[in-house]
Amino acid sequence: MGNTEISGKLLSDLCPPERAYSPPSHSRLGALSTTKTLFFYLSFIILTSSFVTCQAQSDSLRPNYRALRWLLAGESVAYSASIYGLSKAWYKTPFTNFSVKDDFHEWKQFDKVGHFFTAYQICRHTAAVYKNTGITNRQAALYGALSGFLFLTPIELLDGFQYPTYGFSPSDMVANVMGPSLYLGQYALWGEERITPKFSFSPTPLAKVRPELLGRNFSEQWLKDYNGQTYWFSVNLASFAPHSKIPKWLSVSLGYGIHNMVGAEVEKSQSLGYDPYRQYFLSLDIDFRRIPTRHKGLKTLFFLLNTLKVPAPALEFNRKQGWKGHWLYF
Image (cartoon, rainbow, N blue to C red; front, side, top):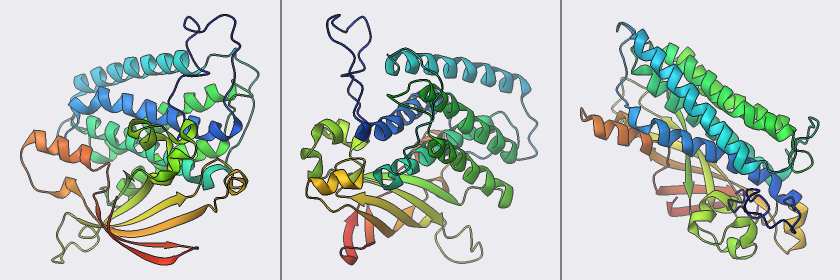
């Protein structure tokens, strides 16, 4: 994924004065943009995880407006601090005129799915916190969707003032809108979350080809090596067939991945002797939120685990090998 090192982005007081700033190569820009959103998401999870529970609030509960006001205030402070820290850590060149630089053609659009996933998860976590104030699930979904969109918008705007290193990417912005829209749309349509975007990762040998881009070790590769990442859409079966005997926790999951991408552009990977292709998966999954428990700690754990796709048998389709089975895929 994006480069998590700070070479070329060192804080000014750590940079030797005789060395000029060297912007990252074009092949790294889309990945760096996605890394920023994930950085922000992880920071947000750390700040809010202690407040998250999976216990749905009844629509009849009276809202605790005092708690809601404190939550909004705390969220605003935490958000402002995160944006300030991100701007100091990432944007080291002087701000320029606002410029558009769309990178939709890069990484077979896989990084756009990453933006979608990050925005959705910020929305999901924020909505879970809002539910604890006693507002309705639909209200919490609306506030969560607004948070998922508003939290990432300044990052895209800041990119626009960092040309040519970055640039405002319309396709990133669209992905940032689509994530919260899926969450809000489910509550508008069904009053609950039935389809959950998830993530999985397994290391690949491709990282050794370009470790500066794809990661030198596991702690870098799970963020940087798109070839090992898979994004899933897990569909809870029992929610669509409530009177069936299907276990309430059982889901079927549709996945998307890419392989043989050792550069942002297909041509770059081909020039190095690789033939990039897309991967599509069908697998089973667990909806941890629907495992019955009254233990608040377990509810929080299950809520957080529902970000990840569990290892399970999977069926893959790609243009090079056709259909391919995996006894266990993650």
